[in-house]
Length: 202
Image (tube, one colour):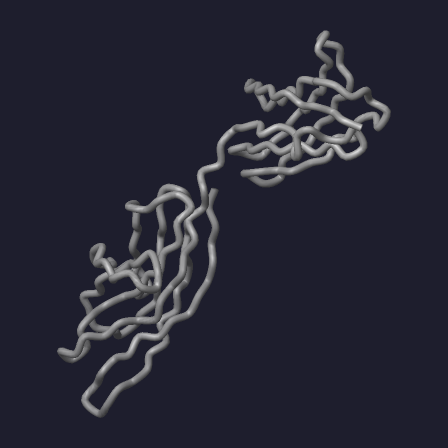
């Protein structure tokens, strides 16, 4: 999955008659579990522009490389040395009239890699009148949930439409009068199938 945000930072450009604050707008930041793409606007600013990153407020800034100029006076950089689920701060570092200068920070949250998984009932054991199950999907799509008794007879079935990737927590509209005991929960998602054992109590 990916996400796009817009943020604003400032880059100071030093000229002969003093310091001029030039607005450096982050046009976009695209974050997926595999890469981060940052695009700044920076007309009439001096380079080169080193892209720096840190993983926490007390961590040291790490220089990753240099942003490259794209059409329309835009600076672009792609970072592929990231970890799923991590959070990073980015900034530009450059020399203006010989003086080291940095831009404002841009915060980026890296999405976690979503997996196909069935966590089962939450909690487990569960009440028949309040049976909730948790599962995770890597893509959007239909998920069929089936509850079977130990003899393989279908007790309940319903289809959920996952409109977001990642973890989902849904309530099974099963019969509240269902007998206490052990059941099998079956999750079907495309060609994939997973099972989990569920204990029903009164």
